[in-house]
Every structure is written in structure tokens, then in C-alpha cells.
Length: 73
Image 1 (cartoon, one colour):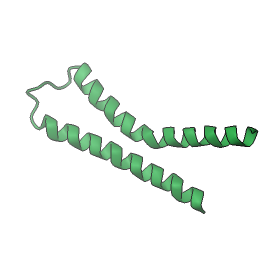
Image 2: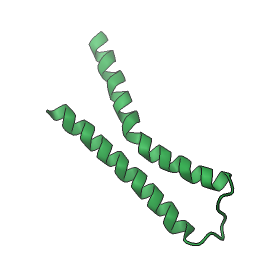
Image 3: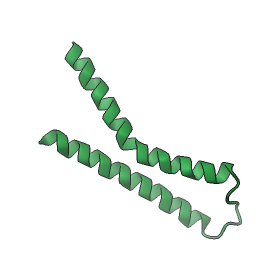
């Protein structure tokens, strides 16, 4: 029973670590908007937002992949 709980907790921590880069990228976009660092008139705002999100999701994928590969070995 205890081993099952430890495995579930470990899995939750691994998933949280894998999601961290994506959450950081979303927080960056939030701070840019909330801090009024950029507005609707900012040139290339959509492209920058898309790039930040893609980088965050890509890093999350790479971290998750590294965790999964480590578990296989």
C-alpha cells in the first residue's frame, strides 16, 4: 500500500516537473500583459506569443521524454 502511494506521488511530481516549462511560458505572457509591458499595438505580438508558447510546450515535451526514457532504463 505504501509503495503504491509513493509511486503515485512520484508520478505526480514527475508530471509537475514536466509541465513547469509550459506554465512558466504562460506566466511570462501573463506578466507581459498584466504589467502593461506590451499592448495590442505591439508589433508582432501574436508571433511572439506563439513562439513563447511553442518553446514552453517543446521544453515540456523534452523534459517529459527525458523522464520517460530514464524510467525505461
